[in-house]
Amino acid sequence: MTDLAGIVAAIADEMRWEGQRGVVASYIPPLAAVPADKFGLALVMADGAVHLAGDADEPFSVQSISKVFALTLALGAVGDQLWARVGREPSGTAFNSIVQLETEHGIPRNPFINAGAIVVCDVLLGRLRPREAIGQMLRFVRELAGDDAIVIDDDVARAEQETGFRNRALANYMRSFGNLNGEVERVLGTYFHFCALAMSCRQLALAGRYLMNGGAVDGHRIVTENRARRINALMMSCGHYDNSGDFAYRIGLPGKSGVGGGILAIAPGIASIAVWSPGLNAAGNSQLGQLALERLAQRTGWSVFEPRMP
Ligand code: DON
Image (tube, rainbow, N blue to C red; front, side, top):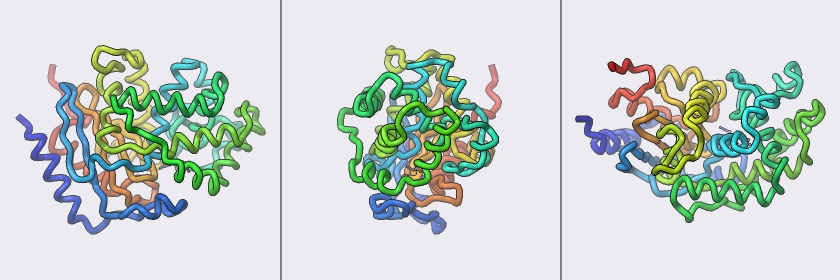
């Protein structure tokens, strides 16, 4: 029997001594102020068991991890019609890149790059006002995690708004191609508030249970089994931007990162995993988060590419 508690504690201990911790995001003051020595790890198992280590109960800015929940809500609202406006291919470019939008007529490669997530927000605003869409997101993650303490960090949302020039460029550019219906500032206001969700590793791992469990949590269906499988597939192929191939190679699990240093990873049928270390690699993904997940996948054999004997 795998000693999960021992593995989780050992990984957290190893991470404490790691020298190469990456660089903390500095584009807004509330992220720049986060100490680089933070590290949290949370596992929620299919049977409900929870394993925690380090700063697993400290909320951090989930940033682009919210793109998974936004995608889930948009698919719930418009189903497969979404795919007329957003692709399902890895971009091979940075999370905020604009280059492909020109040759691809304003259709973002996937829902996990910024351009794709902005279109996802626009889709949600087809039926809701920004305040309602933000409220829906907050209720959704609170319900998924079973925790009403989850909040949106207004300082982060405001700072994103003040500095989000490149996101404005992406939104305006897509609007010029007819792939954005709402007013740019309303769409971005929603997008920035989603990025500003603050959650701990424990809350994030709890919120990811529906993706581990084929779409249901405690007998309550969140999405169909098919949809859960497909969201996981997108996380595997696109969840780490131009680092997605390397993440699949090293870790072999669907995962989604954010520039706050968090990663949500799913071992389907086994565990929902959240890790947080604020230092980022060159692609904007958590340096130690990836290393910790690599060691976890190696020691548990949870990679989806591990042979499973019938
Ligand atoms: O929209 C942005 O550019 C930031 N709020 C960062 C989003 C993000 O996490 C991308 N990630 N790795």
